[in-house]
Length: 442
Figure: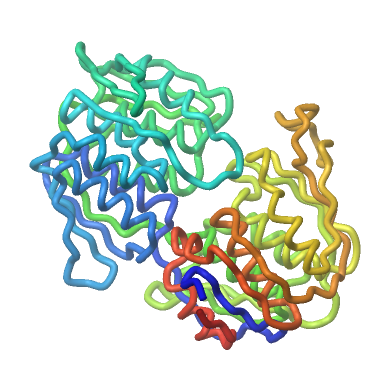
């Protein structure tokens, strides 16, 4: 039997406690930021996930010394000997990560050169790097395409720019922040992403010595500085993982307390969770607080929602929640406006007994950028549906956790293939499931 298959016996409520650590979508970018500094950095509450291992490997290839600290979840970074890495070595790491593109700005500042191999990541849409390359060129980078990838140089250094994004892309905003902080002059970024993870990255860069102003209407102004130091930081908790466990509690009629979850980052999700009929209780204890999520019994209510950039309903929240919506009494509508191919996972749910139809039309309050482009980016979920066990193949990280939730909610025993992909973003998820009373085995 493959080690990448999880046997899941479903049909029982998940009950107990789990703990979330630093946000996956912040920690990896904070690790990249250490390259910008000329003195050591320290980060706490770092989750033990595959993405962290990948970025650690990339940093070590470039001469950053990464060591475990005295505390569980503490990492220390010494970037004093940053150097060029071999193309073959980078390719070994880059097949499963999109981080190399974000290393370009810091490496151009430190070394004058950077390399981007073919990029990996989840297959939920093309997520082109055009934004990144265009911005880097505007800063003054020269991009040379070769068979093995892209070579970047900055013969005249990097200089501040005035730039407006067509769409408030998180990745492009991170790219510009990580490049602008040491570029000569002022950079003004309009239509920027303002997710909590972006604001936390700005906090880190400010600790390092950057000068960054966040204005109204998604405008960020960065005053370039000649050098940066290190930082010491505890990242915001992972709001995606917290919401995933909350949706699991709802789908399995369970009761899960998510230690470390923070209300401020999840207000939009909490409103939807309550609208469906879920209950939650917030504990603001600074040491051991979190949010308890539970199914109160009775029927869940259908909802209509649209995913959007912050402060809208997060795209990474919708997949686990859709599993819970299969148990709501009536028709729910979900309009995906961030990634155009994110509903591929629903065919597996339908094989388990769900009733989900996907449409090309914008079934939301307003048309989105995917309207009339042929993408099936709206879903109608009819419930309640009795889910039954089956064999599942995980297509990407968030869909993978959704399939896992569905297997836990279904009657019978399912085989979930490709489960190691979940390790990219969910720390010790098998041990956490066992702690919640789930019956899972390899």
